[in-house]
Image (cartoon, rainbow, N blue to C red; front, side, top):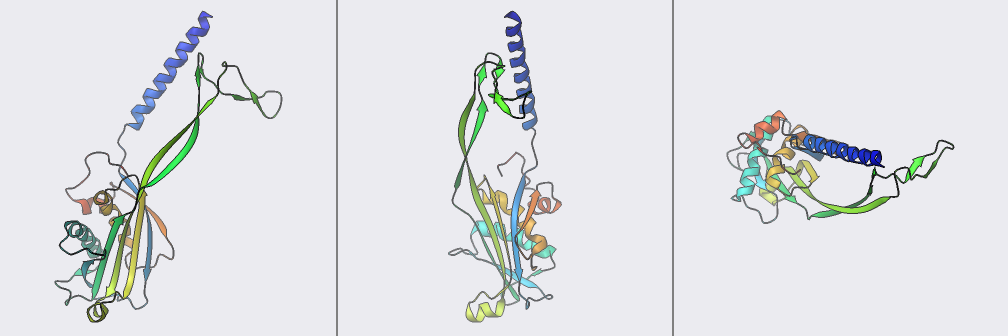
Length: 244
């Protein structure tokens, strides 16, 4: 009986030690990373040269003096310049009108259920063990009576999106129509609804696909170690771990 108690204490100490080690490993900061889904289309008539642009708000009710739009437009102008586009001094001097839309969807609550083994005097109990005598499982009581406890937890995610439309300037000036020459859409799902945090990553992820046809939605993972992200953020690098 005394030896059984010693085994039980030793087992508990071992579990506590393993838990502490796992907690120490999980506390190591990981690079801030986002998974994005990108879809890009292009018209046959899209110009391939003399690409001068202006960026206008695409969201309904937005205006060019909105501080958030001004900040996000800066990222878009950088990635367009990286792709060979030139920023025009005015709408009349451009041949492309870029409409920038963005936003965060309503919170989506997800639930999941899982089972955890119960504790007893000897440690964890596994109610089913492999039989040595036939190919199957049978109720096992080698560690004393026990079982599993069912738990239900939930988490919340947000859909963050960014859309950039390149439209013909003449059609916009003469008819107030958005005649699309190409369109690139990005979305990302995660626990953060902070669009200012996520936007530079979505912008960097979409750069290579501006003015192209992806054929279908593609997945692009990007994190804070990416050189393009770092160039877009400049001095605004995240200094502490952030939700994704």
